[in-house]
Amino acid sequence: MRDLVIEPLTKSAFEPFGEVIETAGARRLMINEGTTERLHDLARIDVARNEGRPIVSIFRATPREMPVTLHMMERHPLGSQAFYPLSDLDWLVVVCDGDRVPALSTLRCFRASGQQGINLRANVWHHPLLVIGIQDFLVVDRDGPGNNLEEAYFPQSESTHRVSFTADQK
Image (cartoon, rainbow, N blue to C red; front, side):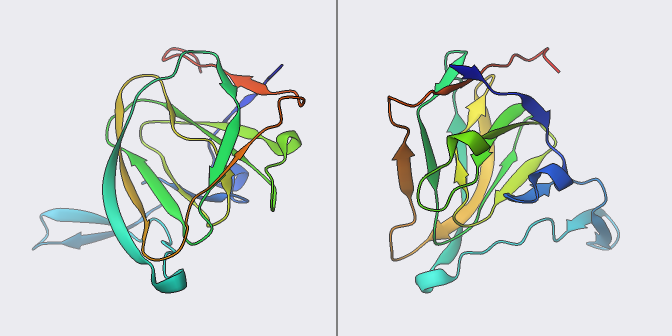
């Protein structure tokens, strides 16, 4: 059993897996007769493969018992998947490299603040949401023909990885 190191979520560290969605550094436009600031073009949504269309959903995540042992990963081969928290609670993002099968040796864990979202590129292996409290996320992803979900379970013979975090852990 190995404990994953939790890294801070930064644009440069997360770049191999997708984009960090945050307001820092965003292009700002005043709209609606100057009463609204638009934080413009925060992520590149990619869902058009195989006649896909973008959908907007809210996912309500519930905490898992800590420490979490990672047994599986998933990916979406036909489109990107963007998550943005709707409350100011930190959360974890676990991703890894791998083409056909997720590579355990490349697992990375990032701690996102409640002010940061992510846009996972198509085909990026990731663990389902990991939160410290019940937390809602605005999710933009793909709907349409084709199978856009693949799950892979780690062989029981391989060592698994654990991750644990609390609200006060930084």
